[in-house]
Image (tube, rainbow, N blue to C red):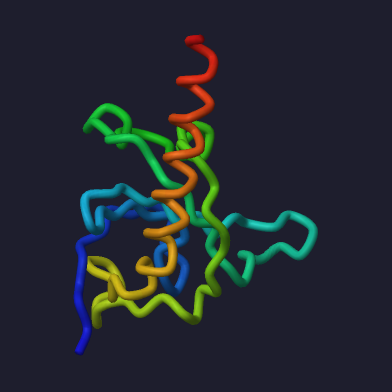
Amino acid sequence: MNTWTSIRYRDLWDVPRIFVTTWQNQTFLLDCEFDESTEDYRDSYVVYRMPGLSESDLAGSWDYLPRKALCRLGEVPVTSVHFDLTRRREIDASILDQFLTASTVNGAAAQLAADAGKS
């Protein structure tokens, strides 16, 4: 059984090539960059943990969004992301479960580093 979560996307080529979604109270950005050398999109999404994003953050170009990321969590093959029939509204959120622990660990490490800087 699929557990669906809604997405907001830009750059559609067969499937969304960059999209934002929230799962288990965490915001994720999945970015499948265009590779100029091959003149095609890459085979995987880079997955980022994001801070809360405002409507103004999502207005216009999303080229800068990866720079706003709290951390880079890893990559997932484009073929492993299951979209709804329209390929525009939702994804099967189970693909994000593998990043929940990594996101929590990376977030805790960032908090520890910030706390250490206050001492």
